[in-house]
Image (tube, helix red, strand yellow):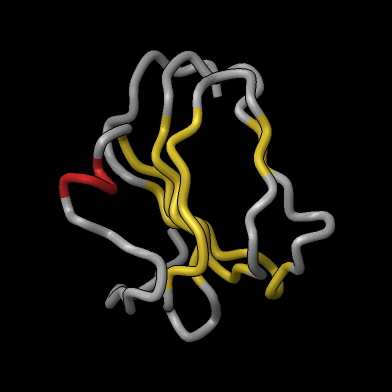
Length: 92
């Protein structure tokens, strides 16, 4: 929050798979739009959105990971619901 741009993408590992209820994300205090991909515990894309600052969104399916990227990245890499993503999550 409060940054002027996104230097690189961000993978967030949620504490547990979240059901639709209670997993709403918000863009409060953000100054730029983001592409957000929701991924389940099997690393399959379950939902995605391009979202503007000051908006909220509730994903359509439970998610274990959330990837935040620069707006336009979803289209650039042709990401679709049902795709399996290959990434390693490391705590920094």
